[in-house]
Image 1 (cartoon, rainbow, N blue to C red):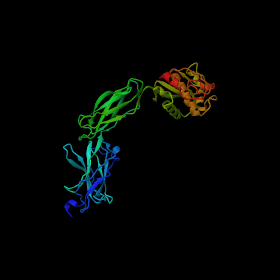
Image 2: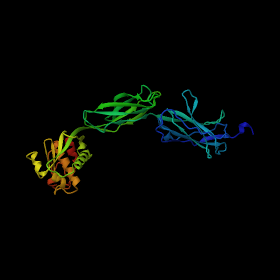
Image 3: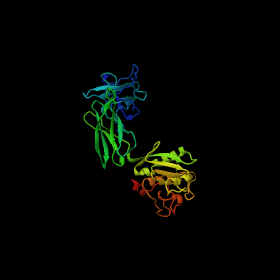
Image 4: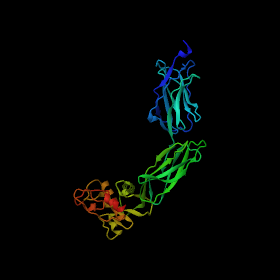
Length: 397
């Protein structure tokens, strides 16, 4: 039999699958697997290569697996055939980036690949000048871009730090910081990326932004596209721009309640998304002073804060949010339900007074009571409710 009629082969059924190799950055590498000395060698080029669309896009630094099957002219699997993965260079030649590995008894091979840029990739039988190669497939590589904020809410007029990392990050690299305005995105700043490694594979960026309007602020960072530059976009968590209120906690008179428990319930109530924070407000405890003081007071001491304060109930007097220790410990006979629910109502009601709200009335039998209704003294047909209603929230926004 002549040399031209020797065994033929084809490489088919090739698929890309993304695997968890995010920690890799820089040029691709692979561990060579040496085939047996008598590995079969195919001499005719009739191989094909296919790829799944979902896996043809990867992020810089991630490892991809290139898989294939070696078969002879009759479609029979060829075991022990050495195969490498190659990437096409800018000059049009092909360079080995992974392998060789040898085909298993089913003729299958799998090679790891971590392209540093969008590339054409192919498999080639590593068998000298007559080796067969598959058709190439394109792998699109996106930049690895991350973004974060140093806080999820910030007081009005204060600054928030936005930062992140970029790979690759050659000298002179920049990212564009944008803010959502209406239906579009508006440029905030072009931020230089500092290179953390001399090979330019990792860099970091950081920007300080002053937020001057109450409400939610949304940002994103974009690696702009240009010749030879990988493109990426990363969204940042929403930042809530708020009116920031500080408070301290103290007692007056003989109170038997657990002060640590009081602090925990206060913090949880103030931070609950059903509460006054819906009006873009945040409450932060400080060791002393603050914008207002929450006082757990012995019942007989409550009237010492103001003439309109009663030993039976809680009240707000000036900068003091006064919680009657008896009501705190036992609740009210006119308010059904759990004690915690009553305590939440008590905190939100008296704090609502500090925010400038007066008393409200039940708006209809069976409806939730406004939190500014005097629920400790009766519900007037309303249902007990510890949280401000929507219109109450808007009134202090």
